[in-house]
Length: 221
Ligand code: DX5
Ligand code: ZN
Image (cartoon, rainbow, N blue to C red; front, top):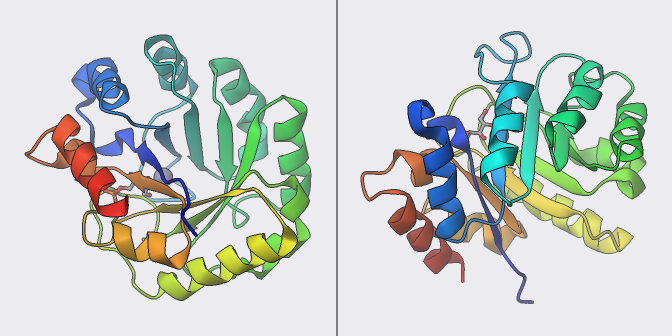
């Protein structure tokens, strides 16, 4: 089955002193959405950006803003990110005790809702929130940093999530995040992923954003 593949550059590896320019370049080069990694120094060891940056990006691109919340109790910030202009909020079940309620909260504000699974988190919990899901994000690294190596053991998990979504007739996106590059992209697409988040391979490569995005597109066509 030929599935449309969406590319989501993650700004984590972009030049933050010229973030708007980097995002506009990605948009012009054919990116489908912009992935924003929000980290709180608790759920993950790293600290990154918050709603102010989402708001600033909302002004420079028309692309959907895909906000990946790697923060404890993300329900506290759903409203603030909605106001900032996020299109989709993805939360971790490990960080949100009442996951179902958090997803409802996201939908109630008119946003799309996603669930991200750490490498050691089972996909089984998805069964219980499936109707409330617009996206499943399978982490293919341990969240916290850009430029880490892809964990190949996640391939069977991607296949299992694909099967689960198909069997349920769910139209949720199946995204992967971490270590996606020209070598790993074809593997995750063959396993059933349709949305590829990539930071280092797009914003960190010497080839530049436009060429790196084109190369990634080429290998998954
Ligand atoms: C990792 C983040 C990713 C990160 C991916 O915690 O969630 O979105 O930017 O970076 P790469 O593509 O460099 O592995
Ligand atoms: Zn991410």
